[in-house]
Amino acid sequence: RVQYHSMIGNGFFAVEMKPRCQWLHVAGVFNGPDAAHSQNGAISHRAKVPNPLDVSFSGPWRGNGGAALDLRSAAYIVHSRLPPTVSQPMVMLEQRFYAHRSRPSLMVMEFEAMWEKGPDRVSIALQRNLFMQESPDFDARVFHETLDVNGHNVAITIWCGRTQKAESGAGLVDVAVAVPTDLMLSPDRLIQRGRTYVIPAAVQSSTAVSEPRASAVRDLQNALREVYADSHSLSVPDNSAMRAEHQTAWADLWRSGFEVQGRQDVRRAVKSSTYYLLSSANENYAYSLSPGGLASNGYHGHTFWDAETWMYP
Image (cartoon, helix red, strand yellow):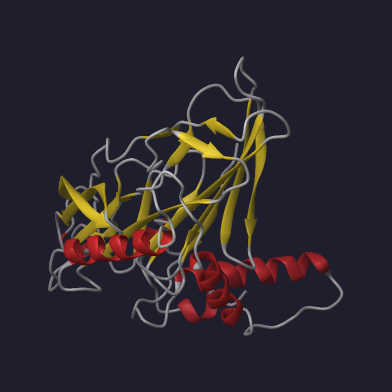
């Protein structure tokens, strides 16, 4: 039984990557009373925010192609195999997820399909349960809007929630999540061999901005306009500098730290611990670390007086 999972995060939000990564956590967003006012043992804890990119490929598949966490570029990579059909060859699919470091409201999924022989385009269906299950921590509503993206109308879905209970002296928190309603953004439902498709989503909270819904929609619109800046049609998505910008930001972070010589097991432990610390903290958000990191609700996501002691790799 797997007890631990990889995570991606940028210090503003983080998500535990597993077969169903349904929820993410946002820095400073808690639900529940403080311990002195708790009832039935329920106390303040990290609130569950729905993950807009909880996505897999639908249809039959032939085995798990494997998954990996790239510590250097802070990306979680999943490989899947789709078996051949009468009209299509076997297809190897790669999904790459990352919480954008320099644009902390953005979560990004890239996917690419490769096959050896056959047509230049194949049909791929994406499956997700977008906001189907209600979060137990929010009073929430779902809205639908249409954005102008380089002259094209793109439908988006917006989840807006407000926490139900705050600690004494604190206020309720609003969170908004915006994502394209149709992840394919393609009328013909076909994808091209070797092309990278980029799907962004935006997360905002009142701990960071005054109007989370408007900010999330604006961030998503700007990201979509960049991703498709050179396209004449949304049916042919283009890659952008979005990943390169994210990787550059992480390269700057990795200039810090230290190296361990000799024992490779200790070196790996130090590198992975450093990655999780960096994924859970951000200089632009005044929130400390909790045991298990931002993606975890361990110890209810609370920060303790000895954080600086146990956070050493």
